[in-house]
Amino acid sequence: MTYRRKLIEVALPLEAINKASVRESYIYRGNPSSLHKWWAQRPLAAARAVIFAQMVDDPSAHPDKFPTEETQERERQRLFRLIEELVQWESTTNETVLAYARDEIWKSWRATCAENRDHPCAKELFDPDKLPVFHDPFAGGGTLPLEAQRLGLESHTSDLNPVAVLINKALIEIPPKFAGRPPVNPELRKEGTLLQKEWHGTQGLAEDVRYYGQWMRDEAERRIGHLYPKAEVTVEIAKERPDLKPLVGRSLTVIAWLWARTVKSPNPAFAQVDVPLASTFMLSTKAGKEAYVEPVIEGSGYRGSSPSLRPASEADSKRRRAAY
Ligand SMILES: C[S@@+](CC[C@H](N)C(=O)[O-])C[C@H]1O[C@@H](n2cnc3c(N)ncnc32)[C@H](O)[C@@H]1O
Image (cartoon, rainbow, N blue to C red; front, side, top):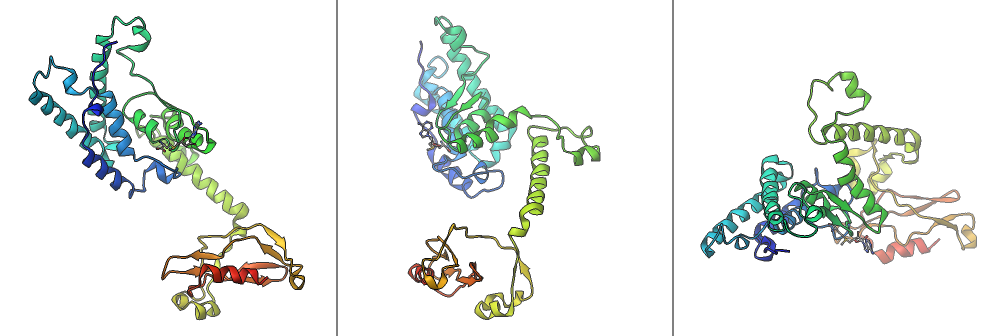
């Protein structure tokens, strides 16, 4: 087998890759990490750059085309400019930039196939019309297979953790099956827009996810919404929390709930009370922003007070719980 050096073995425009990776971590909309944050999830930009640079030959691998160090460096710089463009967040949907990158990959792949046409397994291993398949056996949040797919490779993934498998199904397996298809939800069908519009990529699937996601949210609210009541801001609460004064009389949506298993109190005086097995009632321990919920006995159970902003240490919060 003829071996040619790949770009990644020689150099990468690291500064641009690092910058794009940091910027991307602040972008929420459209970022797969907003679907489910996976630990050790790699930045999309870095994954895109390294897969590209692994697939593309370094110019020094082609002395016939780039005979001197100067010509090789000039060509390398051209590839660097492409990578710098490719790693930008905006390029994730920029078909022109992606097409350039895919072309470069194909160019290197066809050169590799041509050089290895006499290999005994050339038919399976070096098919100039089929790029090598990408497999990430530790796929996690799916960054690498997603970027491989974006660069035109057929992607396969596996992972020990079923949540990671689900993320990868949502990210790389299901969307391509619906590429270019119109949505099926009754609302858009009713509007009669299906035939008037061309559905590119996963636009149709996205419409359906939006429609049925909203349906599921509404249905959940109808069935279990009563278990998540709104919190009324009373005059008493406002006395304790002057910041809530302008909101007295209003019902606010509760944005965080503390869940805990309960046991009967070992204290004979409260034997009928179900005590929550929570290690702390602190909501925030950030200096200057401390907040906690005070457990209040009501009948044979507990309810949480509205969050108190009075500075309270974690130890103080634990002491209050221990009192019951
Ligand atoms: C560092 S994470 C991968 C992160 C991924 N590159 C990304 O960008 O999201 C490592 C993954 O390997 C998986 N893993 C660990 N041991 C494994 C094993 N023996 N077989 C398959 N997957 C495994 C973990 O569940 C985890 O999702």
